[in-house]
Image (cartoon, rainbow, N blue to C red; front, side):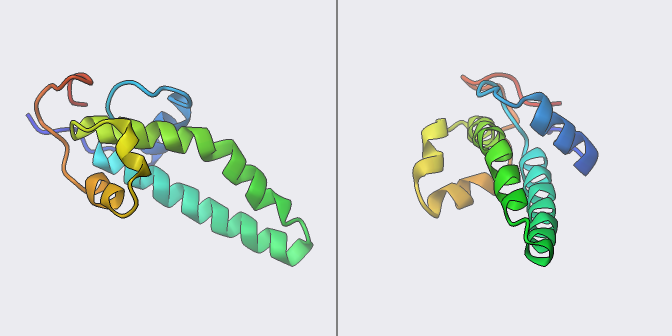
Length: 113
């Protein structure tokens, strides 16, 4: 049984629903859709901020999503069977974030199906 791929709407909902959930697993599509949505919103807010002089908008958004991004990153590491501490290893963490999900249950829980 392969892990479930999520669409962008579901990924954003899971991102905010699991705001401070550092346990369990997140699929590769869940992580990268959330990352894409964050980046697009950040760029829009940054553009608005530069045009209107409200540069703090992008900063506030980044601060509001800091903990959820750490949480989804840790759950993503759990999905491939690694500790969340691997997020702190530069460049190697990008390699790990791009790895396919472990289709089997591991010490962090059952795969998302």
